[in-house]
Image (cartoon, rainbow, N blue to C red; front, top):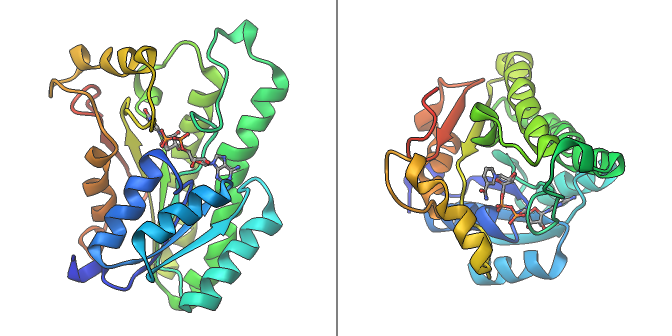
Length: 252
Ligand SMILES: NC(=O)c1ccc[n+]([C@@H]2O[C@H](COP(=O)([O-])OP(=O)(O)OC[C@H]3O[C@@H](n4cnc5c(N)ncnc54)[C@H](O)[C@@H]3O)[C@@H](O)[C@H]2O)c1
């Protein structure tokens, strides 16, 4: 239990799997009320039942504005407020992206990835801001990626979307600061987020170990502490920032 997070209402998009699920469990252990908002309805329900009565599962496609408005309405119906929004859903692994050089990326996949990773971010923020402005408080935490700092050949669409997330964060922070709303960004490093990783996936995750100051594979749990900090009053005077959690690969 973390007293400062007790009963806070936290929406985690993409909370059914991977790092998003670790955020959900971390917030639940801290005593928060957690909304698992994911395109995968059974996956969201499974995480909600693992947490218990303080959780709510909502099926949402973040690239659909009406669906994100419903996500906010259902959260308010159940919990009467929205304290934190974690924009974590992305085309990445569960909903996979093509990995290959620029010439091999299908323009339709470029658009689909931007629709989830960026329009989704835009829509989810717009959906919760009326409640946060009314409360005169709120925390929005967007998820970027360590790939932005060094570049990552083989997924230029994904890295572009995550770089844009940082600019989005800085701009929204300036737009909503007067309403006492913080907007920050968390950038995880190469994290073993797959539930049933293949040997090839484990090798890929291991490939970052030699670049790290801290010499081990990064796990979803490694990012949760920084997330709880950004969602708590301990970070009340931080906004527009990007916190990099990669075991010491890139120094910003
Ligand atoms: N794993 C890493 O190495 C890593 C590194 C840096 C950043 N990230 C970022 O962290 C976040 C989580 O990564 P992960 O590895 O857990 O990814 P993941 O693919 O395992 O999980 C993403 C979640 O988003 C959900 N989702 C996908 N499309 C959606 C949509 N349209 N609407 C709602 N939900 C949708 C999926 O169902 C899934 O639960 C992502 O934003 C990712 O880009 C991951």
